[in-house]
Image (tube, rainbow, N blue to C red; front, side, top):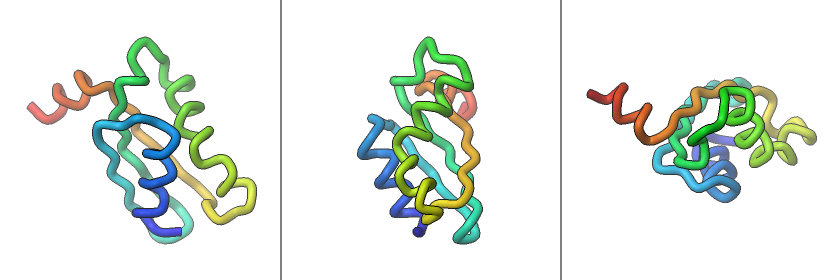
Length: 80
């Protein structure tokens, strides 16, 4: 798997305004911005993202994914 593959998996299962993925081929880090995260706590947000990549994690095609999940407003605040 590469960063583009992971981005596509996440985007297919979750409407996102922004996705960044970086990693070394086994361990990945993603910044995911989605309005679907509104009203969700950190654990709920991570579960939403994990649901999009679960099939690849089960087969170990995707070994580890850590993430920062943000609403569009939270993302805009960080960009200011």
